[in-house]
Length: 271
Image 1: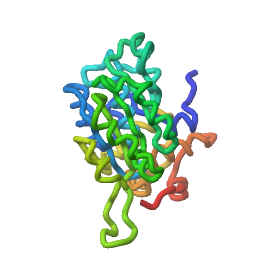
Image 2: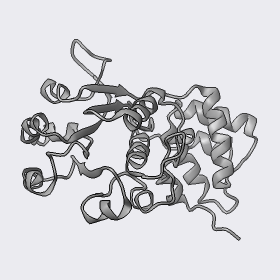
Image 3: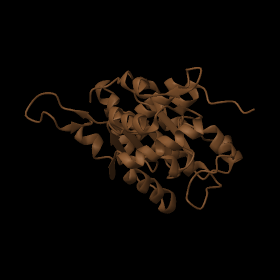
Image 4: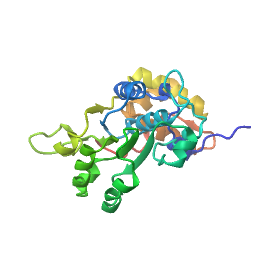
């Protein structure tokens, strides 16, 4: 008997191929172009829970995988794939040689990285190689922590590829109230040749995705004709919320989710 995915495994789920991603067509197109033709500095933005991090992580896995499928998805079986499931593991040095990967990868959590760690990039990372990829997760945090200036010149003067992500937030006051912003300086935005925003899946596509995920995770949907459209409506088509709904369902003895469960689900953001 196979083990069922736990609530935490569902919550921390990352797609294994491009067809498992709902929405985000421009993000997927960008990554497939990168894999086929080469990379340049890119900034990925989007509202919370829209699948930005999962799409980026899959792109990183596909780049590092030496045995990609014909559809440019990672094979999921090689050492590189197994070591970079969430796209947040350093992949360099001896490990790169062992796995046969073309690229080196260095993720940076901009919410926790220190000034000393940023300053040490020159000595610890091969910034002169265009096969070196550095991922700046939540790059806007560098500005709020007064660390942005330490990277601007480094990004400009090195051959490495810089990939960044930033959450889009709605302005709550001022003349531009209601507009979406990533709270990045113009100087930092200018370091990225490509800026791509996430996009929500069509409700019909999300319904299909929900059915597929319920089967994969063995979650029983009570009254699916009511529950699935309600999941779409309450989540506002944000895949991250739907994943969390499934995670909550997996905590129940019968691994079920119904209309009342969806109505009572906690939405943790108002953006």
